[in-house]
Length: 376
Image 1 (cartoon, rainbow, N blue to C red):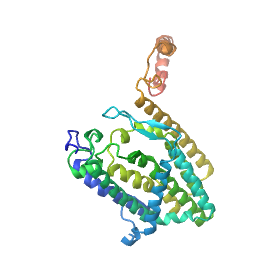
Image 2: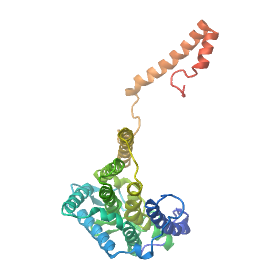
Image 3: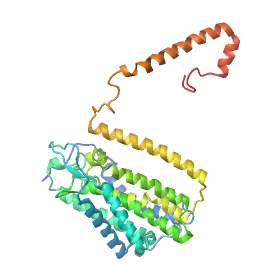
């Protein structure tokens, strides 16, 4: 039996904050799903038509959701392109993880493609978003309860730094066990990227198919949303190993916070842009779309570079690629010419002042910056 109570400071406002978030987060998700399809689509205020409680429950949605989880779990268990070791744990051991998330994305795409070719009405998925979100939320609650009960029997070395406060509500929310596993199946690692992120892509694709059915073809805006967000998901799964150094894996327990976030919040709120476009078409001309693509490309370049450097540093802080300046010699030219140019500018300032007098002062008033505009 693991000891109760930890000295780590409580986050998220403690037990009351955790309880509030367990109600507020699902309520916010359903609010967003409803307003996305409403006429005004206002972020604040109630949607004009609230669904009947019966509209949230569908045996078909439950079956589809469980099939989806089972399919992704089966892909997880397939032979991986490589096995990676996680960060060192309290007992100096390292867990091993299959790196096959991108493989799961490709296999899912192949199955969906075959289904569409065989006549699968993919667009009908958009009519099931509310009941699917409901069963995903129920799954998160039930899964979190099972994980909490499992963690009661876990050794102290297996607990998360902040998830064993002794308060059941807080620990249920944050998660007591750091890496809950059933055999080699790591629950947190599986949920982190696969069902939710790949589900997000599938929902986007279903919305695109539904728009094509309603309007004859998908809009350019819908194509861009699908393409940009597929790039993000594909990037995350291609660099799946990088998730092993993130706070979610190395620090946070696996409780309701991550279970709901991974299984429900991600697929049903991250697809809001595509949902909005289905119910509120937005005309987009090619020149504007080109600018948007350029901005996205620059943002992606910065995003990928920053995340790659962060992961490299976490794995090896002494890596010369991210460990700062280890030798000044290669930077001599930069330092020398910076000092030379600043000094030269100061000399020019004095010479011009002596030569031109008041005319130089008037020039400096009109051109106040010496070398770098708005800086120096």
